[in-house]
Amino acid sequence: MKRIDEYVNSQAKKCIECGDIDDSLYNEYGVKRGLRDLNGQGVLTGLTNISKITAFKEEKGEKIPCAGELLYRGYDIKELAKESRKRKNVYEEGAYLLLFGELPSKEELDAFSEIISENMTLPTNFTRDVIMKVPDEDIMTSMTKSILTLAGYDKRKNDLSIENVLRQSIQLISTFPMLAVYGYHAYNHYKNDDSMFIHRPDKDLSIAENFLRMLRPDKKYTELEATVLDVALLLHMEHGGGNNSTFTTRVVTSSGSDTYSAMAAAMSSLKGKRHGGANLMVMKMMDDIKKHIKDIKDDEEIEDYLTKIVRKEVFDKQGLIYGMGHAVYSLSDPREEVFKSYVQNLAHEKGKDKDLSLYESIERIAPMVIARERKIYKGVSPNVDFYSGFVYEMMGIPRELFTPLFAVARISGWSAHRLEELVADNKIIRPAYKSLVVKKKMKEIEKR
Image 1 (tube, rainbow, N blue to C red):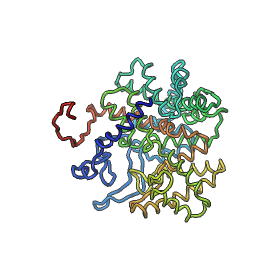
Image 2 (cartoon, rainbow, N blue to C red):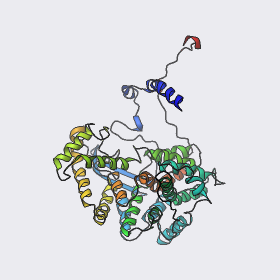
Image 3 (cartoon, rainbow, N blue to C red):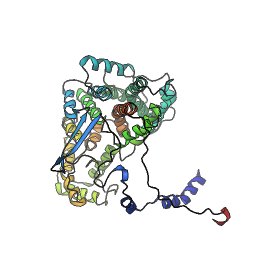
Image 4 (cartoon, rainbow, N blue to C red):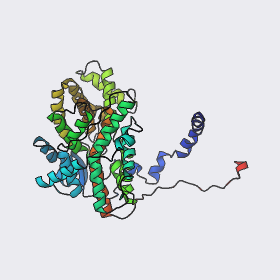
């Protein structure tokens, strides 16, 4: 191990030198970095009927920022979330909508929820032989390993018929909460020397309820906690075909690969801190802010510290106020707007009003700081990740499960996009890269 460390340390500079590309060349060749133009607008690479994100409107040929809107199969996410005030299972209702393109009747939703519950099971000894075998504090890695291993139990893993892929998708939607929670318990026991317990899911409970039930030693949770988590899953389950993990799903699907490989690839994308790890970065930032701000009611002190963050002087020195701004939304993120009312209720229940006050102050002050320091005037608003980590922490969900919980939600969206890709197109996705390679004359090895 020591030799390879010494070797790579001596050779890494070569990788950096040969991989460096002058920024000006992107403009010279008209290459859109990250498949986005200079205004952040994504390059059109496909068509979808699954969801729609609106952040701008056109007036007299000009794009004007507007309040954000998110539609699942044409239905406003705000309207879908309202159902949580009447009953549970709004996540399951959203999953049905994304998969089948229409809102379910009560009978259809009951039948779908029953199928989900019936499939909340893993192969015999899977928890012991796979999840507990090599525990990892990176639960996303643990889940990805489990997903690929499940392929070995599926005799029809390579069958790309819609019926079979739908079966696989429903089974993964059902088992993702188990893979996440059991993966955490294995890590917490073997690495943190804590008690080990495995609670089986209850077939009469929703996915949100079962997640909390399996996570907690006493299996108990409040009605508000279950409702808030149900809404959180609904809000995170889908966000267009262009986000990194969903696009990854479609790219791998277009190659003709199996469902397990496509979902494992999506997981690998989501675990990145620029994508699914955003709410964890918000929590780390908030820890840092609490350490350095003496009076959380002092707006001037908060503004001063946020300014230092943007100027790369403090915290992780990346210049980002995590949870503020979005690649698509400008004036508002509709998911954050829905979530905030639930956050307030939960903060009151948990006695966290003081912490909520700090969040609200940052929400109010940060856009002004970013506009001033970055000269960004199109509008900067909090995104859904600004509050989600705070909510999970109030519910006692360990930080190691923040990104896995995102995956538990997003598997429904990934599944809908995989099915759509299989139905609607039969071409492998293959974007072009402009080559900067210049032909060189070969030298004999003694002369190099």
